[in-house]
Amino acid sequence: MKIITLTKNLFKSALLAAALMTTHQAFSTELDDSWDQTIEAAKGQTVYFNAWGGSDRINSYISWAADRIAEEYDVTLEHVKIGDIAEVVGQLEAAKTVGKNTDGNVDLMWVNGENFAAMKSGNLTWGPFAYNLPNASALKASDALTTDFSVPVEGLESPWGGAQLVFIYDTATVPEPPKSAAELLEFVKTGGRFAYPAPPIFQGTTMVKQLLLELTDNHDALAQPVQEADFAAVTEPLWNYLDQLHPNLWGKGKSWPSSAESTRQMVDDGEIDIAISFNPNEASAAVKSGQLPESVRTYTFEKGTIGNTHFVTIPYNATAKAGAMLVANFFISAEAQSRKADPQYWGDPTVLDLDNLSDSDKALFSSIDLGPWALPIGSGIVLPEPHASWAEALEGEWLKRYGN
Image (cartoon, rainbow, N blue to C red; front, side, top):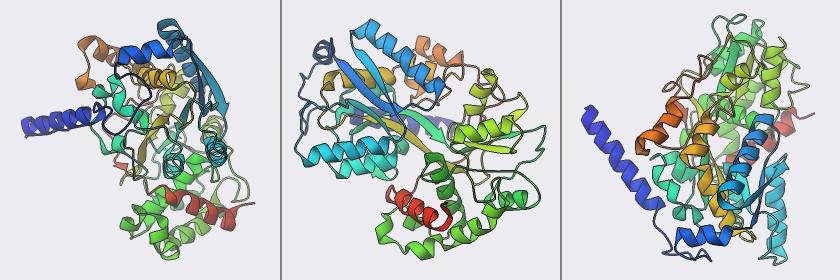
């Protein structure tokens, strides 16, 4: 059985590698077919990377990557710190409307599935550049790398890291945490302290989607565009549940944490018992940096929690396309991925298949110490994201019902 499983996994990896390395069949990169030519064209370029700037660890990691890219390739990576990448999507939509098809001021973007869906439907991406990246051959064979919030990726974005909704609790105050929506409701009703950020903050929206996945009986509808579903019927159990949950939360449904990071700080300050995160290694990084006590642990609900892959994409009118491709390729190198996976620097799970790496590259990952605070490797069932269109619909209804 183990031999059969291994053979199937290797076959899947080979298929993924073949798909990701198919080049220039229906797409002109505006660059030479040779990767060496891409590197040469990128020299001297400045890549404006629009990415969330709300984490010191992530900002420091991107700064490190910028130093390495400048040293290795003579390319300048400028981190344009963004609070909400949807604003950048709006700017690209406006540029498209007025016909600004060249000399754009965004070369590379860190996007989530909802924003990618908007960019793809609006023809705001450059093209399937991810097929051309040499390091793509080491990516995991996973549906999470070929679809983003149920939307086919088709090479229009390159994976950068893995994510899963997790819960962080302090064993000193919570011996046994709630492991389902029903147990969470009972937990807060009996004095347990919990809070989540208000949508449309990403982790808050994810928490709402998580609860919907567990509470609804119509899972097939969530994989389709929300316009094709009976929204009221599918979501009725969710609103009934939240009507009971919110009065028992920290803030009593009247005030909300500003971010998932703030829930982690609230656990450290003793204000709540359980924090949420979309990074299975968040607690490990926080303990190592003195932001959480060593008594914390990470877990998921018994039936699983939402997980996905986060990506980078190149806008249709990017100025430094060659440089952007080079940066995207560096981001999925073993060097960059191993540092990113180390909680000392970030702690973001890798998208690489370690079996596809050389022994020296494998060693970069084997030296990482996650400690007992991260979600144990191999634990936690990963649930697929609903279709991207559900996010906006859920956010709108949540704000109508509970927004202040």
